[in-house]
Amino acid sequence: MTEFEPMTGAINLPGADGSKPLAGWRVIVPRGGPWGDSVSASLRARGASPIIAPMINFAPTDDQPALESALAKLAAGGFDWLTVTSATTVDVLASYGVAIPDSTKVAAVGETTAAALVAAGYRADIVPSEENSARGLLEEWEAATDGVVPLRVLALRSAIAKQVLSIGLARIGHHVEAVVAYRTVGVPVAKKVVDDVRAGKADAILVTSGSVAEQVQNQLGPIPERTLVAAIGPQTKKDAAAVGLRVDVVAAARTSESLIDSVVNSALARA
Image (cartoon, rainbow, N blue to C red; front, side, top):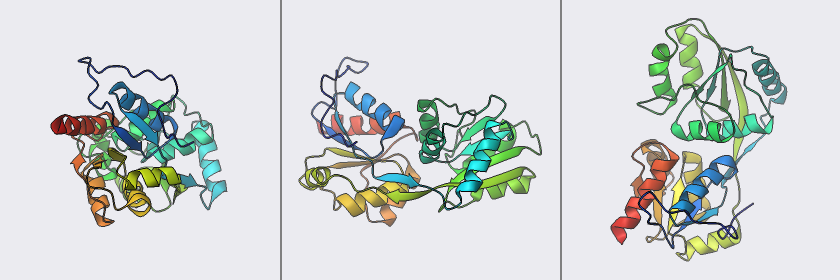
């Protein structure tokens, strides 16, 4: 459900210093679900009025039997590792009610994905400490797994994702089962959201991926100059530029909290 105003009766908790630096700010949150709820709560704690407007969603994979078979094998303990490359993959796991056994460790590509896992009741055993990407995970894989080869790995991905991780793990010598978990599709946002953004009534827009950047540009663009566009990382900024979306600030770390902090810092600079 799209949220146009703060929840009735919601209490805005003060920040660590007792202030609310985002008081009066209306911030577009481009994802719903546990991640969107968590980010919205953090925004409210800083005084903002979050507007949850999901812009991307997942559609079923074209090979449903393969996905269901892989998830059943996962639940039965058939894999040593599960790699999760996006928050949308977490949505798929949650929609199937998948229980990840304790014997299976989880590798998350990016802090956003890790946060989504935790919010959905899962865990993230590995998150790249340097480069939050498939390539970054590959670089840290050997140290994280104590060099054990081969391992049974389930690599869930989107239909359009490059198989950098699964191919890289297979080259190392692991047994990798790469399965398409979903197709990414755009979600039309409510007309009120579009009208408000174009009228300059949104103070900030959070951009968490290239797919979100494309939808923001296509559905809400051109974004007014007064509206702050905040990207969760350098790659997202590059992806946004590729579709013509201006980015004003980039989070210092690829986490939802850092993304919110970048908005807070911009608000304080404007004050």
